[in-house]
Amino acid sequence: MTACPVCSVLADREEGRRKFGWPEHDVDLPDAVRSLVVEKDFRPGDERQRKLLRCPRCGTFYLFETDYEYLANGTEDEQCLTRLTPARAAGLLRTSS
Image (tube, rainbow, N blue to C red):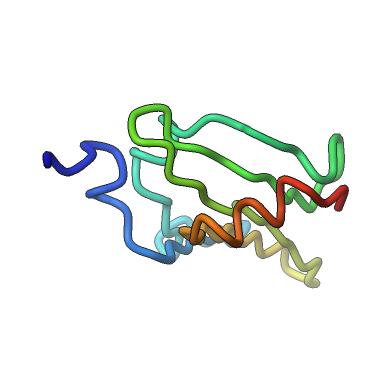
Protein backbone atom coordinates (compact mmCIF):
# COMPACT_ATOMS: atom_id res chain seq x y z
CA MET A 1 0.00 0.00 0.00
CA THR A 2 1.33 3.44 -0.95
CA ALA A 3 1.33 6.18 1.68
CA CYS A 4 -1.02 9.06 1.00
CA PRO A 5 0.97 11.98 -0.46
CA VAL A 6 -1.09 14.45 1.60
CA CYS A 7 -1.36 12.72 4.98
CA SER A 8 2.19 11.35 4.96
CA VAL A 9 3.56 14.87 5.45
CA LEU A 10 1.17 15.72 8.29
CA ALA A 11 1.87 14.81 11.90
CA ASP A 12 -0.93 13.56 14.14
CA ARG A 13 -1.07 17.10 15.52
CA GLU A 14 0.05 20.25 13.74
CA GLU A 15 0.06 23.71 15.28
CA GLY A 16 0.42 27.14 13.74
CA ARG A 17 0.51 30.60 15.29
CA ARG A 18 0.76 34.25 14.38
CA LYS A 19 1.42 37.23 16.58
CA PHE A 20 0.58 40.65 15.23
CA GLY A 21 3.77 42.68 14.77
CA TRP A 22 6.10 39.73 15.30
CA PRO A 23 6.29 37.88 11.94
CA GLU A 24 9.59 36.28 12.90
CA HIS A 25 7.67 34.21 15.46
CA ASP A 26 4.97 33.01 13.02
CA VAL A 27 4.62 29.27 12.49
CA ASP A 28 2.56 28.15 9.50
CA LEU A 29 0.73 24.87 9.13
CA PRO A 30 2.22 22.61 6.44
CA ASP A 31 1.18 23.36 2.85
CA ALA A 32 -0.54 19.96 2.65
CA VAL A 33 -3.33 21.31 4.89
CA ARG A 34 -4.62 23.32 1.92
CA SER A 35 -5.38 20.02 0.14
CA LEU A 36 -7.89 18.97 2.81
CA VAL A 37 -11.58 19.59 2.14
CA VAL A 38 -14.24 20.75 4.58
CA GLU A 39 -16.59 17.92 5.45
CA LYS A 40 -18.46 19.79 8.20
CA ASP A 41 -18.27 23.35 9.55
CA PHE A 42 -19.37 23.40 13.19
CA ARG A 43 -19.28 27.21 13.51
CA PRO A 44 -20.05 28.81 10.13
CA GLY A 45 -19.04 32.48 10.12
CA ASP A 46 -17.45 32.32 13.58
CA GLU A 47 -13.95 33.75 13.99
CA ARG A 48 -13.08 30.78 16.22
CA GLN A 49 -13.28 28.05 13.62
CA ARG A 50 -14.03 24.39 14.26
CA LYS A 51 -14.17 22.23 11.14
CA LEU A 52 -14.04 18.58 10.25
CA LEU A 53 -11.67 18.21 7.30
CA ARG A 54 -11.11 15.19 5.09
CA CYS A 55 -8.25 14.17 2.85
CA PRO A 56 -9.57 13.83 -0.72
CA ARG A 57 -6.92 11.20 -1.51
CA CYS A 58 -7.33 8.67 1.31
CA GLY A 59 -10.35 9.83 3.35
CA THR A 60 -8.50 10.49 6.63
CA PHE A 61 -10.33 12.98 8.85
CA TYR A 62 -8.86 15.91 10.79
CA LEU A 63 -10.27 18.41 13.26
CA PHE A 64 -9.22 21.98 12.50
CA GLU A 65 -9.63 24.58 15.26
CA THR A 66 -8.58 28.19 15.61
CA ASP A 67 -8.43 30.51 18.57
CA TYR A 68 -7.18 34.01 19.24
CA GLU A 69 -6.40 36.27 22.14
CA TYR A 70 -6.53 40.06 22.14
CA LEU A 71 -3.50 41.60 23.82
CA ALA A 72 -2.43 45.22 24.32
CA ASN A 73 0.21 44.91 21.59
CA GLY A 74 -1.93 42.95 19.09
CA THR A 75 -3.57 39.58 18.71
CA GLU A 76 -2.19 36.09 18.98
CA ASP A 77 -3.83 33.66 16.57
CA GLU A 78 -3.53 29.90 16.94
CA GLN A 79 -4.41 27.04 14.59
CA CYS A 80 -4.52 23.36 15.45
CA LEU A 81 -5.02 20.38 13.15
CA THR A 82 -5.53 16.97 14.75
CA ARG A 83 -5.73 13.64 12.90
CA LEU A 84 -8.81 11.72 14.01
CA THR A 85 -9.50 8.04 14.44
CA PRO A 86 -12.37 6.73 12.30
CA ALA A 87 -14.52 6.36 15.44
CA ARG A 88 -13.90 9.94 16.56
CA ALA A 89 -14.63 11.25 13.05
CA ALA A 90 -17.87 9.28 12.90
CA GLY A 91 -18.91 10.74 16.24
CA LEU A 92 -18.24 14.27 15.05
CA LEU A 93 -20.17 13.66 11.84
CA ARG A 94 -23.21 12.81 13.99
CA THR A 95 -22.96 15.93 16.18
CA SER A 96 -24.18 19.42 15.45
CA SER A 97 -21.44 21.36 17.29
